[in-house]
Length: 305
Image (cartoon, rainbow, N blue to C red):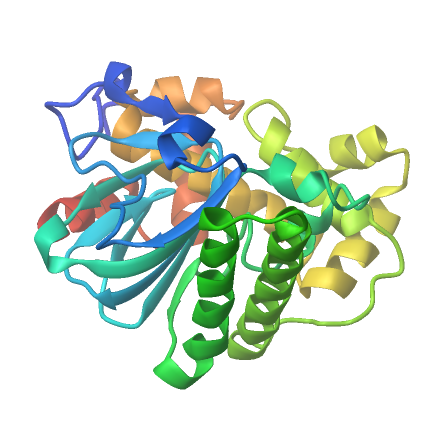
C-alpha cells in the first residue's frame, strides 16, 4: 500500500468544511441549555450540507425515516422506530431527505446536567453515552418509547409555558428520561448494571475522550488517575464487562475511522497523529480490530454511499 495515498470517501470535501455547531439558547427560543420538539415544529440541529460536530448531546426518536448518516466512523441506516444518541464532539454527516423524516428530538449541554448534579461522571455512567463498543442507535417499539416521549412532551410544556418551578420540573423529567433510557439500553445489549464500587471506570472513560489522540497506553491513564493498572482494569471489567485495553482500542479505532473517512490525511499522517510507531502498525491494528484492510473498509463505505 502506498502510504502517501490520501484517503477519504468524500474527496470533494476537505477538513476545512468540518465545523463545530455550538448550542445557542437564543436559537432555541428558550432560556435553557436544553430543548425538545417535534420535527414539524423545529427541524433540529443536523445539517445535510456538511460534516460537523456539536458541543451538546442529541437524542432522536424517528417516527418516519429513510437515508443514513456517518457517525464517528460508522454508517447508520435510519428507519421508523430508530432511536439515535449522539454524544458531544462526535463527527457526523447526514445523507437524508428532510421531507421524508419525522422525529422527536432532545438536545442539551452537559453543563445543564452538571448544574443540578454533584456527580461529574453522571453522563459517563450512562451506557449509551460515549459508547464505542455497542451501537448508539437501536429500534424501539411504540410501547417502550411511549413513556420516554411523554417525558419529552412534559419538558416541552415547561419550556414554553414556564412558571416559578419549571426549571426543577425539567430537571426531574430529564433525570428520569436518561435513567429510563439507560435501563432499556442495558437490557437490550445485556450490559452490566451493578452498583459501582468507585468512579475509576467512569473517570477512565472521561480521560479517553479527552486524551485518545495523545495517549494510547492503559498504564499512562492509570498513572493520571493515581491507581495501578490492575485496579483500573478490575474497575472497568466490573462496570462495563470489558477490559481497559479493549475500551481504549475501541476508542482509538473510532478516531482512526474518522480520519480515514473525513480528514484527507494519508495512512502515514494518521499514524503519526495518533502516535503509532509506523504506518504498518496502524494497518495491522485496523485489520486486527475490524477483520478488514483499510482499503476494504473504505471500498465498503463508498459502495454504500
